[in-house]
Amino acid sequence: MNKKLDDDNYVMFAMKNYDNPAGATIEEFYEDLNTLKYVKRLMVKYEKTGILRERLLLNHIIVLGNLFTPPVASRLLFFYISQNHHSYLKAFLVFLNYLPEEIPEININYVNIDSVIYAKLKEQS
Image (cartoon, rainbow, N blue to C red; front, side):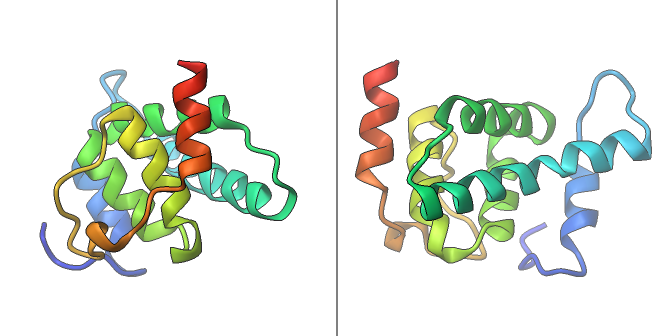
């Protein structure tokens, strides 16, 4: 699906690309999809307080990558998270080697990597 994601079709896109080997129910799917909200909250909290929960964010992003594949998870994250936080997100995706070459919704070449976050991730690895 190369159609641009919007509020009406992102859930369907996620459903088509969802791969939970445990045979998840629809409730489990939505619970897993809520991980997008957790990532968003943690990034908003970082912006407001300067407190970065990098390990928790890494865990959430890795879970999404395992459930949807890294390119699909990246696309969902860029759609769901506000543009103000794309530089934060890109730092995590580059660190995890999850960043695809292109995402239809955005030009990822114009999204800068937050160097503070990336340095912190590299320091702890």
